[in-house]
Image (cartoon, rainbow, N blue to C red; front, side, top):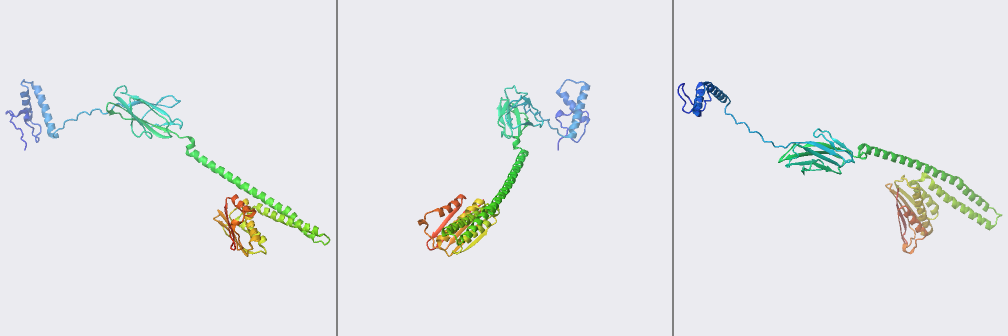
Length: 422
């Protein structure tokens, strides 16, 4: 329990100013008298009553406030200045343009074109003349951290790529840095990189491709029409004329009043006309665009097999795969000629009893032709590549195909062709 100073009306306080006030009591006259006596002890000179009374009143008021509020804390000390004055001036300079001032920290972006990729910034403010002042700057997107500029108050950036940047700069006088000032920078990309320009380019390219494809399709239709007309005229005009020549010579050769030599010559003319008519039918088949499929090729090979193998041996033809796949006119012609050559060789030299022909279109991408007989065969090393084998090889190589001829005496001969389509 704290000791409280208690004194009477006329008894002086022995402790004077060291007596603590009673926290339970409000302002009272003993406290006022105690404070006055303490002042007299400190200053032995008598003070005027008014001064004493004023001092006592102030002391009593202070004691009363302290009693109600409790212990007081000392006021905080004034904080020392920890920042330097901020920069106030900022300018930008672009090649071929005059230097112009900027308003930092307002959010307005500086917009530049893609070829204005070299910029210079100049900055300054209060404290710049001091020897202790220095600067730091950075350009977001280029500088990863603050760059120490020292006593330089100008910085230049060259070769900036299109994009958005923010230039920041601050200064220090001594060890304290000012708040940075900043200005956004927007370098627009070239128009040919804009989404609308690329979209227009893609649309234009698609339109050109469509036009080219439409023209190509129209040209193909026109070409097919021309081919059909040529085939029709060859068949109707020249074919009919050759057939008429053959028929007339046959009729003349049957006359009994003609010499033998004349009849032989007439027979020769008739045979030549028929061979020419056969070749003409081949050309008509080639030019007719209705036969530009693998199925039509297989049918034509079957017709040739009927003509060449009739009365010599039996045969079978198997067609499989994507038979409706289109095939080029020249490729169709060369494959047919190769098949006719193989069938002709088998009919003349193989002495076969049976022959098998396989036509297969694999996935619409590759054509395979295989002709195999059970004839007497031959030794490939002992046979020179004359007109027959050489002709078939040239037909295959013309279309980047592969030709394999396998034969063995007493076993037969196998001719295999593989050629890409398209």
